[in-house]
Length: 196
Image 1: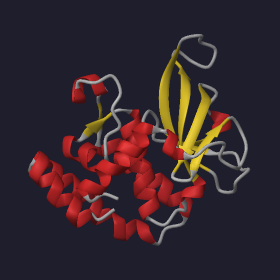
Image 2: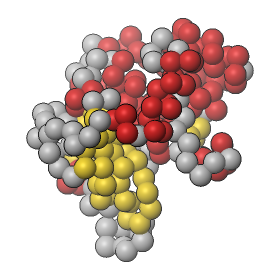
Image 3: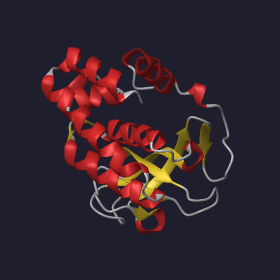
Image 4: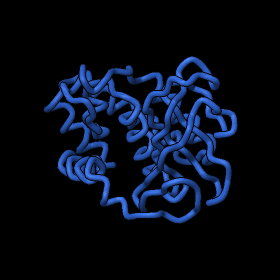
């Protein structure tokens, strides 16, 4: 992410409060750069969980489902689970974590505990230290990063990153990421705003 260009874009679109959020991120990046990967995960997860407010796409964008760019999310200071996941993904990528270790993961979240039959669509960021490792889950609902085995409330549906889409398990993508139109639209808007 080009944070200088992003700050200018956010200032034009959202004003000084949005630009200040970009500056807060800019100040953190040098401090996080030399940290071990797991520490980067914790810092980035905590930073965005504290900085941003949860708000539905219907309230923010007047749409049922909209994937906001990092600039749009920082500009508004709010987003839904996809927006938290997207900004964490691109920040960790900027900090040097290989995209092969990160996946944006759609899950069915059980509401009311792991034994509940009530589920809701949700997105989290998962980190794989090795291709076959148990992933760690970064979630806007919890500040604590937990292994997937300690998140029985989440049932994975599919995951993706810049390299492809995974359906079920496996260490290689099942299909190209270009098949996700929301992802390709997001990347186009990120190029325009300078956050890619």
